[in-house]
Amino acid sequence: MRPSGRAIDIMRPIEVEVGFTKHAEGSCLIKCGDTHVLCTASVEDRTPPWLRNTGMGWVTAEYGMLPRSTGSRNRREAASGKQSGRTQEIQRLIGRSLRAGIDRLTLGERQITVDCDVLQADGGTRCASITGGWIALRLAINAMIKAGDLKEDPLTEHVAAVSCGIYGGQPILDLDYAEDSEAGTDANFVMTGSNGLVEIQGSAEGATFDRTEFNSLMDLAEKGISELIIAQKAAIS
Image 1 (cartoon, one colour):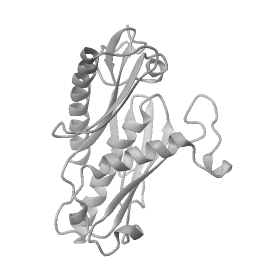
Image 2: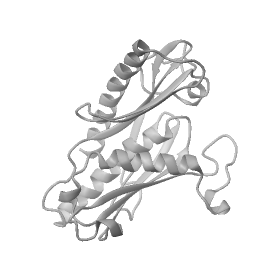
Image 3: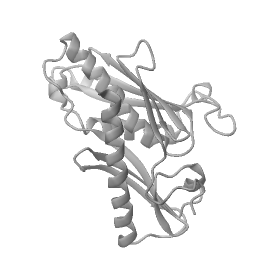
């Protein structure tokens, strides 16, 4: 039995509130169970120096956790003057993931920054950030198309992410914190709407896992991603 009482292939409830902030070109609050992440997309008419005069745009991301997003207070990273290695790794993952679903030439020489701020954490914050970040990106691009700033839609694919793991000897879908902290294997799957793999992050925390178990995790991930894509479509419709 999972601590949450869910069956092995059942996701946490997903809720999305779009237009959550006033000023960002695209924004949403995504709730995956008790993990809540605010995602905003900001458009700038400039690119990083290495992309100037190439005709190509850029999508990047920043990630952070509020001090009381967890059970005890975490000091703000700004107070220490540097980001942790975990923060840097996660925001690079979010950026790579979102770029997998966009035609940067069609985007043109502009940059979209997707900020993912964790308001409340209960496992899977990077996955919720990618899934919600795509919604914020979609809304920002919709606004640019409506304003006439883009003649074509540069988004080519939905992109979403979900965690899977082996808990109590069973492959399970969408781990919450209680499961993640005790899982023998933990993996994050980033995929497109056409089941294309963008990235897999997997590690054996307590015991190694074999090919059969990995295939089970992959099957669960495909099911979870399909449900997340449905939630994305419902949010932007």
